[in-house]
Image (cartoon, rainbow, N blue to C red):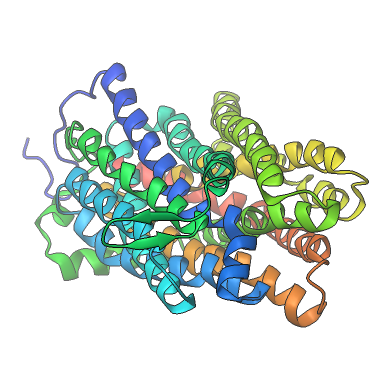
Length: 453
């Protein structure tokens, strides 16, 4: 019997679990390095403000828009390339570029120079997300995808935690020696030299990336395989329209949660400094420890919990796990930022905040990959990256600075600003997930039917 031209292409066996997890481990390391490079600035806020003469709003701009907007813009053409070209090589080029750009942040002598360097970091890091999502989906079947994606995404929280812990330790070490003089560059302030120290070793990661084999693309459709780029984009938009209610709820919910997360990552250290009178090195170190322990465990738990719910028969397990675990986050965050009596209590309460907020990190991408054909997976990853970057990364830190500088007009009211963001954003995200559950289950069923056809 002749095979239908619209059916799935014959596929080889899945790679061995050991090699599949090796690939995830390398991508996990890449995720750590990317978040280390993008978030190291959070531990240097006080020093950068003092040396460059900036206010909270300008610091918020440096943490958010230059990185987030260009990270989002570049993710679109990169996703188009990743759905057609060698994804491993795309990531390797990106790692090299963002590592050099991070080191270039250390050469900045004013707001404009640092702004441009942050743009370059965003451009380089845009290669990782869509390409890694697509690669992982070709190494793991759907029933194991949530855990694989959660482990990969654990690198995000691990990188942020290491950015704070290593950044604090590095600043303390470098700060005791004062300015550092480099050949052809001249004298660098401690925060500038820290950027160089963090950025350049990332070039070694390129060699690790090149040990990954480009996987066979699974779940391909013959009609899409034969279609040109314009036809594939048209089919992608048709897919989005066909599952419009699902994607609108899921993308909006997780984008809002990213906004809240980046507001916290960008400003919690300074909140602890201003509220409790500690140093940014001390606050950064201990908040980094909290992120490392509770952020990574929350992401891992999210993958396990989603798998548990799936085994119980919940087709919407990834969304259900996200909303169950994040529902209590708003009230806990309010207590943390408004009523913590001491630094120690604030750090204790930040633990459950970080744990609950990390649960959706790996489930967001996996939930969308589950309802997307192979040739569209990097594109849907790019769409999520675009929205979460433009809205989440760009606005998260910026809104906090906007509130303290122009609304409260008091830079010591960081706790109030963070509470506002958390107590509005998290409930809104949970409501969107609840109202999107039925549509998501319907999309899963329809995609399974189309794939089997």
